[in-house]
Image (cartoon, rainbow, N blue to C red; front, side, top):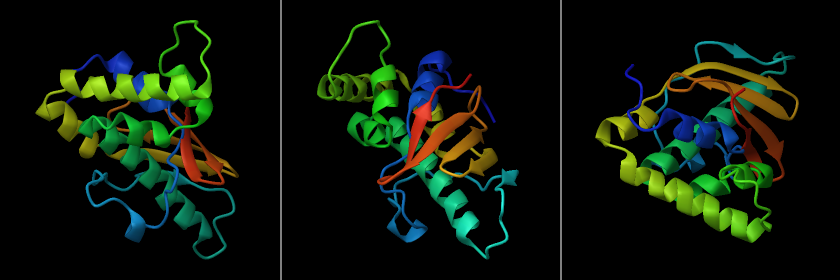
Length: 169
């Protein structure tokens, strides 16, 4: 799979910095315009003997990452930032300035929205066609490796669903 032509540090800082998606329900509730990301080739879920609950978590985690990547590809900064923890939103632009949550959200949405202007069709397709290489869930945290990324994406389970939370290491 070809790598993206956009500034990869910017894209993957955004991809990794972001908390998992709010409202990452079942596949039936998934946005039909969300990217069709291939299933994980390596899934590790401790205690996966309960008959499906853990598999549902894997699907929800992967749906969160897919929805985030779709929002980035579409230049929909608000949708992307809605899928991130407050900490991740604040980290999108880490310029040392202190901002309240609303100002950080607005800047996050503007930054991700403007990313679309430097992406070409191949970049967008790369986001939509990326493959999950590894998904690990441990309680209320998850780590996902996507084929276009330089490192893992961390997510946390919140009352709103799974949200992207931390930058790749």
